[in-house]
Image (cartoon, rainbow, N blue to C red; front, side, top):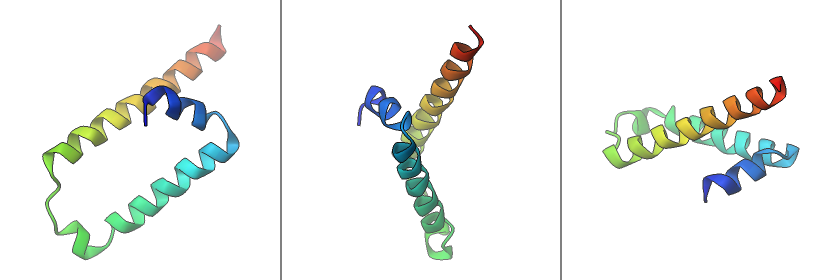
Length: 68
């Protein structure tokens, strides 16, 4: 999904709940011992870093918009 589309989804309450539900499900999966023992592929780490950067960028954009 394109980042612009993700931002539109997050603006709604239902989108925020959907995103949070996905995050919780991913964290619950990742906490399982058999999953934690497996190495993480470098490509997944790159995607994760990119996603976290987008999220931080979006939040700072919203904050700066509210100040002006």
